[in-house]
Length: 212
Image (cartoon, rainbow, N blue to C red; front, top):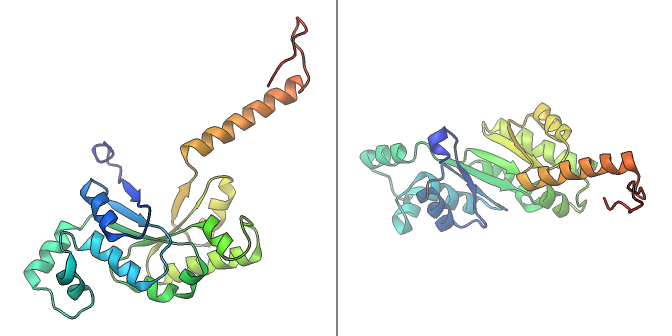
């Protein structure tokens, strides 16, 4: 349905599992987001699953680690077969930041998403998105990623001002909120408007107390 409307379907798989990545691509996804990436080897597995389909197993890993040279005709086929697939890694922990250069050095990785909640917890400043340590970490990931020529995004569910802040810093993918969060935010806003207008203890004309 998405593809029929020229929308690129991107799936966040539940764990850094190359088989789940393959399954999502086989099901029609054009892009894969993998959570909690912390090592170069995990990215290699991800790239193999997304960019080298349908190769798997020992032969795939021999091409990925460079121990075997891929024949030119096969290389052309694999490149064409996976040309529209997008490979994205989530960076959301201190160990991932410590290995950021090697994680970003894997050919075939297209982009990085910062997971702000998990990153803030890993930094020891949970949900303190204005904390200097959190802001410095995000700034480091954005600048390092862009210098590598890769795309970078960050996700927030609340204030759009945070998105604007990090786009100005260099992020070029905006992932903003989700349906349930937007529904809850609007409902809270509307209910507060009603409460402010009529008062929490307001009564109707017949003396019945209003429950808002």
